Length: 482
Image (tube, rainbow, N blue to C red; front, top):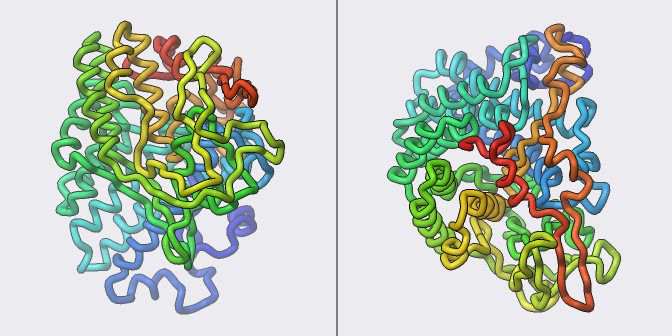
């Protein structure tokens, strides 16, 4: 990256910028106590570096989750405090939030590399567990890059790398993280391999890793933690709960019972965000079974998943400050006696909407689903029905975790800041164009639409995206096993 442009964008940084940008020259740091040499000469520099990269992981989550939840059908942005473009899938290189997301991913990757290649060389106290964690976090950067971008550069001023190669790099680094004596990192890395292979359509490899992850930790949850006192706070918690009656993000009505996943746990504790959950392994296995026309096996896998989800903790808290009105009384369902249909062709279902003005609400803050074993049995009549059910469960289980937009086949763009400074990219590069499946693009202005009849106490969602995905399973852009 051009050094003058870089110094204008980021005046003081110790390590790196996003994607293809270069290291800051430590000789330009004016504080003699903050030179690279001084930091490397401190006692055990790897330990504070690990804490710093964990902080960067929290910043990645903050750039990723709210942005992509807004872009999906999970949430509508009803105010101006957050991104105003993604709701209608207006995806442009000039979008500063996309730039920040891309930057944060690159910085996470480069911080991991610096720890592996530089700090590791000078800190003899570096442990195998720390090396494994660095590989794990580097892998996670590649994973999100490959899930959400069609191309990204991974070297300073380098050629953009296409998404399958990004996911291959994720698998390579997750593999290096496996075997750690930190059982959480070990199991999460194996699940990360399953997730990357799933996105690549590598069915056998994805199932093998998913099954191995279940054996390693049948209750796996890997969280990113935040700091409510000293920051970074959880931006998703701010958007979904802390801003209260501003009603920034309004959930799709049939997902109302799952919102908010994050809430105020006190002045010093923020809600964490799950990056990996073992529920994903069951979903991957069930989708592979459907791809093999084993609907009975898929049903059994999903029933085991329902038992797991039912075993997850829920949280009870006061949500009285939140409205479902967008400052327009009667515009959104807001009581338990309202029935919701996933589309005009789907049946009305009760129990999906909460009443928030009485006693505390009870919400699944790890995983939740409206699907029970009876519904699973009723949905195994065809491959299309089974896939619709699996994607409904993916939507419900991963709500608020920044996963849905990728399941919809949408990919973001290389930032204008990057391609203006990188001679290997111009505005006509395919990585600067969004990827939106045509069956999503045709309804992108109606992803969050519904018809609510306050008198009849019914709410009809305009489009059942899960059914649309299952009907288009042959597309190369969605449902990787089909």
